Length: 122
Length: 325
Image 1 (cartoon, one colour):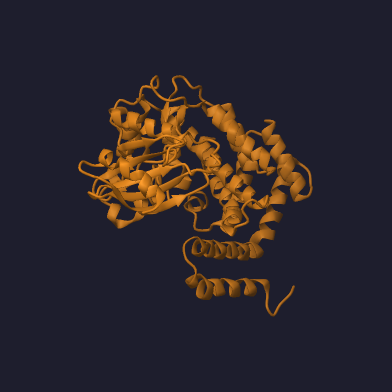
Image 2 (image 1 turned 120 degrees about the vertical axis):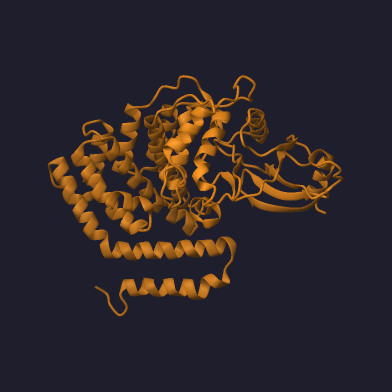
């Protein structure tokens, strides 16, 4: 773990620089891109905080669904194949429970303000 | 006076009675395939020019501007709420491939229409206005129209599945949605004129009058009438508004007004099918825009970050799959 500063502190300092110093000097498309850049940094911050736990949980659920252990990428690929080939139904309750838990974790990282998150996660 | 303004001047008498020239030409927006300009006649009539730039690269699914103008005219003749097309200009002319329409007053920003106070008064009636406009568009006799692509649910699905497969992504929610939609694709019985991009953001809304014009016709085609219904209900186009139709109305408002205006009865189930396909479509479009970053053709942070909007469509797809299960 690198500290003084932590990665989170570094990101926060860049967000602050863009919002307080850089963005006010920009206009039109550049000003818009500065806002998007801040959103991107905020997503990275949330991903650093919660991304690994979400991936581990996802890997565990996929291992249970598919009946064997494996790496995230291999399990994800296998799951996609089984849905594509019709071996797992798109409305299968166990599949939907896994997809729901995974996408709630991801949208909490990507876009926590999105209205659809509240719809699904309550 | 620059060249384009000079080229537009002879059109003036056609645009407003007594007009002799045009003034105040300014560019509003423009991409590689399409430009939008605003100007007035010397009598003060506000106009919009849609024009293909001389060095246009064209755009995959878009119809030619002459087709767009012809469709708006046909929809107007059938009673749809659309802008008034005033003049057309042929490719190779001084203006280039273009058409001029009367500029409407109102708002197109989806978030303002769905949530801001000035639109509170007209919001309750807006979904019904949309239903009525769609009934008129879908009833346009297709026999006299310029050539258009015909696209069924399955064709649309396959188009976006190809985009997804081509991106190399492996996303189980997209897989589940594709499988679900493929197994239930409705047959295309009688193709109608479909707007193709009918959503909050592509309609002009006035704070007192509500819907004043259906805009952005470049994705028009022949297809399933429920496609237009499903697209305006797709959750990415609700802009944080609490209701399904564009964030501002209920399904029943849209569908009842559609039937009352002579539209063929459409089931809510069929609209929800197209709504799910709408989320998949926007998710694949987010991936496409991200691919522009990944391949280096547009290295902006905006193109990179829009890839993270694919997950918003996935959360909506899971909600729709759960509802259907």
